[in-house]
Image (cartoon, rainbow, N blue to C red):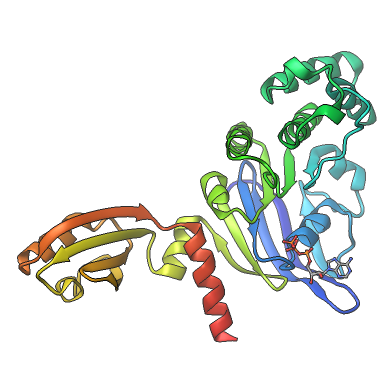
Length: 312
Ligand SMILES: Nc1ncnc2c1ncn2[C@@H]1O[C@H](COP(=O)(O)OP(=O)(O)OP(=O)(O)O)[C@@H](O)[C@H]1O
């Protein structure tokens, strides 16, 4: 186990009518990129607000870098950066002026701030437009300026609410690359998102929220093993044999499903392609195609919520 940076125990938030978050237990370690996932209204934003001390829990405890965000709001604010879904900057000020302003608010000495600002603007590729008013910035540029703001603050933890919403594919990729780099340098990142493909590429672990509770938490491959029966998906196309029967009892195969005429989808816990090919050929099959993919988070998500709905 690494160093716990965020710890929630029995964290609960009730509003008059709704339970937004119920009995949340969560530990996030230093350097993780942790994804909060779930349908609308599942409790992701409320969890973020609780971590930041922006709303008071009804029950339970939360510690961020050892501090209670409600009792020690300044200590948390100094170390934890927050990038909301739409970042608020002063439109009439330039990018550099905005960063200088927040540096001043954060009590960073002028010379140190100037250095950090130059460095941050370079890293998010806004150095060329540093003297432009933010009013002229696109959404992607604003998001990058938001990251620059976190860099200037030198925060240890960054909490990003839907960081790529409204970004084009290239800007999304750039932001993800940047998030990956920051985490490799030791920043702990918590992000909420609906874009599962994106979360899969960047997150070390994810939590699937369902009606205020964390239904599943873990690495995508572990969740795939739990929900789908394996982290590997093999597709095989062959004529002249019963593929499913040929695979009977094969080690590592957790499920074989007919997906079309002569086409079978296999969920597996290891790369079973060689064994599958041998079995099919030995059964007299004529192999047409064999391909393998990692299970996607999309599939885990859809299957998990189907299972939950089924159990209800
Ligand atoms: N201020 C509030 N007053 C009353 N109910 C609230 C309040 N804020 C959130 N809720 C309720 O709490 C539940 C969780 O909301 P939350 O915003 O945390 O979900 P979310 O997972 O972030 O959803 P989305 O993906 O739509 O952003 C919802 O049922 C919501 O209606």
